[in-house]
Image (tube, one colour):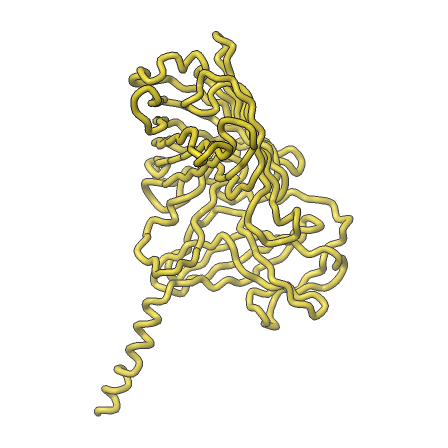
Length: 402
């Protein structure tokens, strides 16, 4: 009898360790395609045998075996149709990776187990293969831009990070980058931004989802840094919290998707006295996206009304106006040009802001997770503090989210 009691006592630490271990999905390769000469596209089935929902990872580590050579490979998720997998269920998602050059026609083995013999065999494409656009008709995209939303991944941490039940509702919003251009009063420009879905499961927006799931909180911070001066002061720091309702991009015709958002936004530089700048706007921004061959084009005009007091900057309407236009063209794994222009047709004052990016990994043949990033501005009001000044800026640096 004592032996029977001893067995569960010996197993208790192992059971407890298993319960505390982070839940993981078991990925299985469903199919592999090579729609472009340098691109692999894999359908991955993700099994959840646990008792809690698990977020679908943005990246999966894999291995490519060609002629006996083992090469590490990172599969990047390209569809956003399932933000998480329910307990004892499965989901399917598509992932993409860049293939190594110089192996045209050879047999390759894609494996999700490093050093394992099991995997999915396919023929490496020839360099002359025509490019073919990837069609994801069933993918639900939680954003009005062609890149879609980046769902929170299963990131590692130096400490236990349990208890963040709503992490899957946090995603990218505005581009995140750091750029530099010497010889101006604001040499460097840094921007970070995110949005958070306030209701429902992350990404469950639009279609048959509850209408309240479209409500989001967004935040953007922009720093203008005068690195050329002694002590390198910040020329201006701007804070832009907002509350908005998002309608995700939805196909309405062959090759055309419509979406948009409406919201209220506060902008402030957090200063007081004569240096204080702030304003409040209520805006609406529809967005139309269409395919142009391999490229995706998005046009998103915005119109806004000023609300509340403008005593910090009473003439800002004269320089900013009430309308702007976002225009973006590019590919998911190549060049992307994004421009934002605004104009007050009554005063003739306006501005033009442009951002050009390209995956750094494709330039230097590395797995670095950065974009080569260029940013240019001309016109009035690059920042709130200098909204009356006409300026021209050209900066280069790195992007993290575009």
